[in-house]
Image (tube, rainbow, N blue to C red):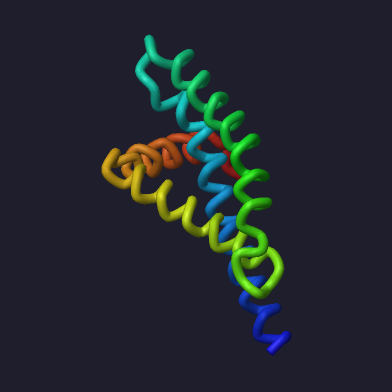
Length: 113
């Protein structure tokens, strides 16, 4: 049972790491994908979201850590719920195509070799 739990935790941490990496990509892409007159506002919104997350994240973890019999499993479930809400809110915006285009441009900028 403990061995299975260890692999479940490892799998979840890999998924959470992938989610966090994509969140960082959205932060950097916000300034570059914004219209010229909106760049400052986009950076401000990203910074405000980071500040909000810095306050809400630990509070959410503290409130949900004993949600299940396994310590802190509730906090991981809450993180999964937040990730699903985030995905659901970003999908209608169609940012995936913009980000893929932005990544392609960034790769072309890098020197070969």
